[in-house]
Image 1 (cartoon, one colour):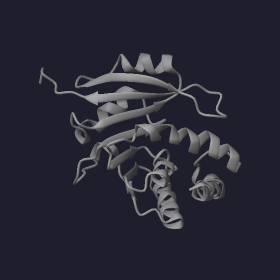
Image 2: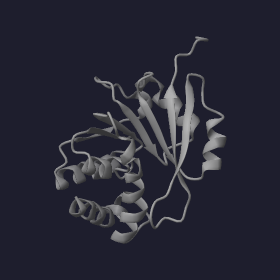
Image 3: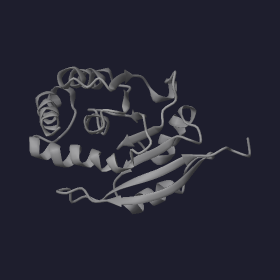
Length: 194
């Protein structure tokens, strides 16, 4: 598993400048700031068989999670073709049969099967994130947004659109990362005012 994380980090360095994927320039930086950060979601992937990663960019958090959980199907979504091209290259290079890269805007995405969980990392405000995933979720879908500071996440959570509710905000410690990180757990709820 560590070999795949290292290989992924090396691909990010090799193609990072071409595709504008990350500012990190060393394998150690990527392993800490991106891979370990993405893996902070791992303990919460229980009773999950499918995950949609919205705004995946360079494949974060989807690629690190897919390496750790080969039993889970990951759909990695981004609207920028060059980023999806990179993700496809990673999938082919690392032989990740449980990953499906998708180039589409989330607002226009139509899934043939529902997913158990929708995640995002540094994608958008909580309001914007929940607004665009509304049609992809039901009240059984687990929703987790990876965010920075807890206080900022609390402010954003106060502005959720009707039909979504905040379940919890959990601070996470990523070894080697000084910046504050948190996970925001959300749920869709039936809108009784519709």
